[in-house]
Image 1 (cartoon, helix red, strand yellow):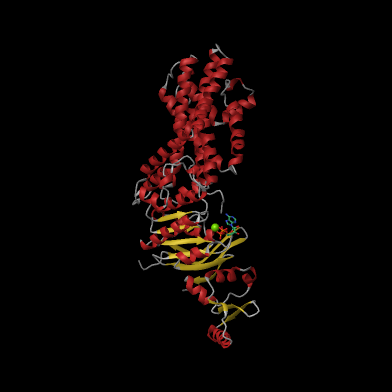
Image 2 (tube, helix red, strand yellow; image 1 turned 90 degrees about the vertical axis):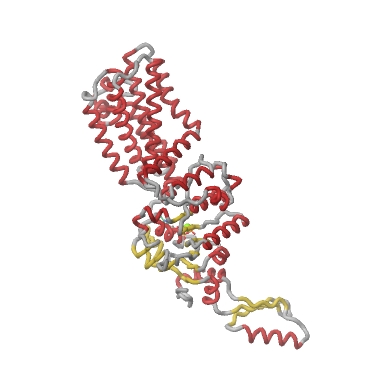
Length: 297
Length: 249
Ligand SMILES: Nc1ncnc2c1ncn2[C@@H]1O[C@H](COP(=O)(O)OP(=O)(O)OP(=O)(O)O)[C@@H](O)[C@H]1O
Ligand SMILES: [Mg+2]
């Protein structure tokens, strides 16, 4: 169990002259939920599909459960579950038929009805795939990825198109996978999703990893400064960024108390993952030196 | 790990079920050769020589449409929809999957040839086949060859929208020069030569031998050779250029 589930060393992938992935390194430990976060075209799907064995890499080393995914060994495919960003399905098959059929393809499948329930598709179990809504079809994708009881699950934007309730339910499913000791590699555009689910996150842009670490650490590590905001006596919102807010807050509150007043709408906040993400992926920042971020957790 | 044969069987069952789930497509699939048979049968009515050409000809056309045309269209559709890509991520061996798709096409070919043979006997005076072994050998060889060519041809078709045009531009000329509707020997020399170079003419020769003329397997050995050559070439190209993903990397 000690070797990582996924190891990526200096992975590069070019499409013709376009370098989609430009030398990335990361590891995903067994039992870890790892998030790849980045804007459109960052190279998330390219990276994940190299690890799934769909795409050849241009250079670099990758290992998935100890296998080279480029050779697509059948044993690896039976131990991995995949939710593609866009995957098609037989149009006339019903949900239950599809899950039942997929279960047959794996050596130790989960119970079909249980998986349908986990995906929240009980009411649609006998519906044909082409009658499913976008979000329901996505839930079927999740069911098909889980029915083989894989130890490693790739989820490429698994909750895109979900309504809020379905997203929460999918999060619970993914958390339950972690509780079962499964390893999960997921990509997402949703910062709250990464923050909620991932043990560690890599922020990727233009084929490079800009920051990697625990979501909470990334917030603190990237921008150590605190933001203090309040409304001044003229009713204007004031905002200061300081290394240590103690002094500023003390001065503000002391001055207010001296006049027998209050500091209106006083807040002290640390940057969230969202702030870090926006800062790192802002266009101006793309070519600037990478901010001081711990490169590894 | 479930073995490849069992998985291929499950996949074949799924493909069959999906085929019948689209009843109108299934219906037209089987009605089309009959429609041809009855229309042309009516036109040449009473002319037994012409009927003796048309019945095996339509049987050969059925083999072409259920294997070459259907597989090429189906594969382009599955590729474009992303079904091929999804299947590729499962432990289902590629060979078992493609074998199941081919077996599905073969089943349709067998059903259609049976329908044509029975109709020939009942309505067009062609009698029961004289040589069942020859019939089976040529149906099997034709199916294998034309299925391989259909898979290979699917690689040339860029997307599903253009698939019917791509398929028909081969299907229609081939059925004309291969002697589906008239005896290929009566055609102008250059058309006859083209027809003789193509596999369908030889499939029809074999079927005709089995059903009508009495030419034996030994007489038609050369035809079997041509079919085999096309089949081997088709199989090599089918495997070589295969793409599981509409977005090639
Ligand atoms: N098959 C392909 N051929 C050519 N270029 C490609 C191919 N696939 C991806 N690209 C390009 O590589 C870059 C990275 O694409 P990728 O799909 O990995 O991005 P992504 O991070 O998954 O984006 P999104 O969030 O939009 O899904 C993009 O610029 C894309 O246009
Ligand atoms: Mg993507």
